[in-house]
Length: 322
Image (cartoon, rainbow, N blue to C red; front, side):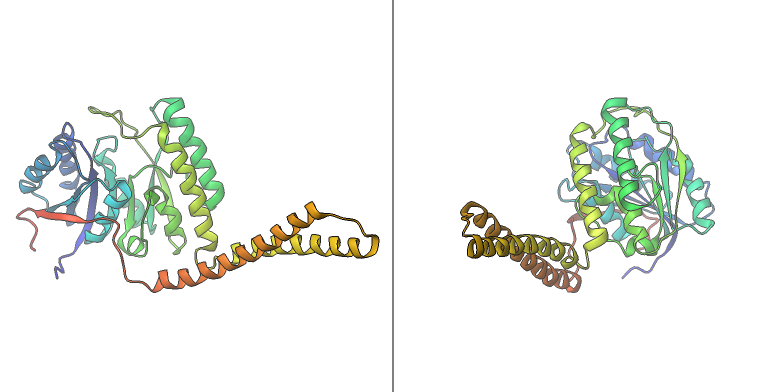
């Protein structure tokens, strides 16, 4: 087991960034070599299909800063790539960012200053966005406001990857799906102190963005999922039980009224009777669902750790001891 520790780990995910990887690496090194701390770089190649992998292997081999490259077996997505980086990071502070040069490595010291002030999570805020208004900025604005309202966390920009974390915070967080953009919300649940700093929003020098309108619906569903788990992840019966009780009371109440009305006034409500029975059965089903989910929740929290990614190989340079 390697016990080597660093002051800072920088995690960068790459997917088909052959045109820009070298330029980003040079910019990152310029920033890290100015920092008077022991730093490490962790690059994650998320199943790139171009020449990104051999380029990254060449770059870390010649890096004056300790560097490792995680080659994932396929394209798992940014959440899995970040989780892989978190799992392998050995820094007291972890900074995550994109490798497309839309995040400026020169801003890393500003994140570290806020961490030094006592914050656990420092989130970047693309205050002056330069993306297309209808395709990127408007959907992002609506999603961020919705997320702030749902979570109660006053951040302007949940979506950017450019964030800094104390290592103990991300160790308590398990990511899945597309939850990387909601790490501050998950961190807040374990008592993290969170702040936000404005960052530059730079035009990609080369290549095309991997994001567009197609992810808007996914973001919405992620927000709804997260809102549910924030309130009911450890007590699903509180949600399904209430829903079941509501349906059961409505169905049994209506059924009681129909029976009494038939006995006293001999009115026939066969159609309504079917509705009452259906509501009662649905109430029982929702209640049973809550019990089942309570059982599954207990199993989930007692289960062994399961990774959401698979590493094919790990490359490292001579500056890494082991």
